Length: 91
Image 1 (cartoon, helix red, strand yellow):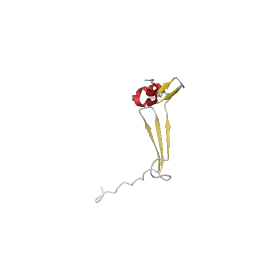
Image 2: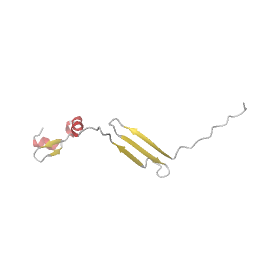
Image 3: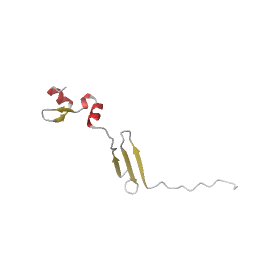
Image 4: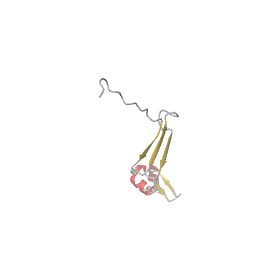
């Protein structure tokens, strides 16, 4: 055993390039690519992969509040907003 101040372990510098992967509750996976030599303020590239079992338009539309939903207009076979659907008497 030596006497005196203990020697500090060598400090290993943080990596300059790394990847972070985030999995969201809706099934999407985000891969964030960092390279601090290219861009020091954040990721320089983000890849988003959607799951194959994502929700259909009808399921998403039903989960929204009434004023944010899209409504089907049979006259021109397009989807319209809440205000226009109310004017046309579709609600």
